[in-house]
Image 1 (tube, rainbow, N blue to C red):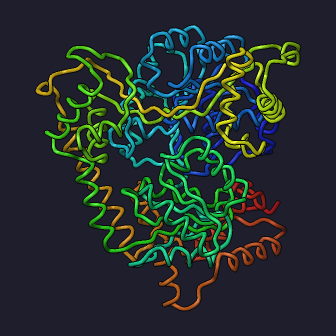
Image 2 (spheres, rainbow, N blue to C red; image 1 turned 45 degrees about the vertical axis):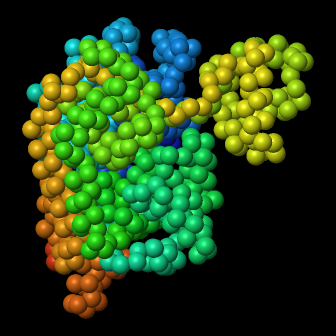
Length: 636
């Protein structure tokens, strides 16, 4: 019998109750239904599948698109005393063996993997033997041909139904239009009794604002100067992250920058400094944010306009996950329209260019005709670009289209920090006398500051070790090499190697088919997304939340009252009551009626602000101030 889900929630996360829809989704899964959960950023997706997985009492398989996201979740589970492992392409055979031993011996409740691993027959054979009770598809919009971040490798998940016919599937995503939601259910071959749960995409505590400016950076600094609290600034260009961060620091606003081109240790250090509040603002590309568990982000500013409302909603939604008032600000210039439309043409190069990229990559990697099937090749994209004098954006776009067509996938998630495991027991360790003085200091330091070194490979931040010991990073790495030479540790040096994966053998270019659904249909969809984003930014008269929710298929007849068009309208009509005013009035009415009133009476009393007062009631319920008792709203 499944364990009590409330006891699991309390024991591991310390919460007394679930958020709205979390319990319903969990019970649907435990009743054996294939389930789709549409939960906005901050809605608690991770807790849903983690509680459900623990409640089954069996292994849970979690399929996730990013190695960094898997690592964050495994580390977070460990902090809540739940054991999990994850598989990724950078693992050594020894790491594979240790991970499988932990799973087989029942020392891991969750197994995380990327969808590419589902092509591995040995991996599938192990899964067939282990018989997970639940398959979780995180970021499920990646499986939809019509989703904004489609990954061909996600289509491998459907074959799991044959390998694990008794397992239920739980698919979760923060962003999905009705068309994408239907495609997710179809691609995952959901059973007829499947269920779908959708939380409102409305984030009642976030004020969505658009500010028009020709020179954005000065306005950006002004907004941050007038607000307080932790903030994220999103840009679409790596170089610009540093430029903006330097500008903010010069203006007295503590800032750092983050993008995919930084090494693992640097990214981890900056992310941790920002999460700990030592840095107020992090300026980042969209490589930052997924899986980041920081509830008190007060301001998210987009310096550059993203190419779709899906991406904007997900990134802006990282503000205010604690439910407190927060801001999502988009800086907009009329030039952004032409920039987005030009970006669209870059994303869809001519078919001749795509075929040229395919042929040149195969030649670069020395892959002969009819060879390469199901193989991974290290791919130095910088050397490739220099060799053939090609533009990065054009090559990466061509590789994405080739991946969607099933010919060649570019995998740029191969970043690994230095990992090591101590290979002698404690008695032997303290008897070693051959180490240099520096190596002894380094060894003592990692023994004091890292756990699990004797049982598993542990990620080591070399820069932090060097800083805390006041030595050069080369000294730390030399010490690791010395310890490895003396067989004190097993060492896996850090590396960052993009890969090319061939799902099929190399073909002649004339046989490569980039079909209508891959090119023309997807171009039309991308164009619609771009125009919807432009419309959101440039239309300053209609409620921004209402426009965004309509895009996601959620009708909202009443404006939000918080976005800039709503505020402008209220100003034109005269001073409108704030949410604080409405909350005080609601509490006063409840107190005057012994703490409870029918919702119908409250709606009538607050007409024509019925939608706003219901939003306020939901927020107060979520924070534990109110509850619904049948038709009545009651104070706690």
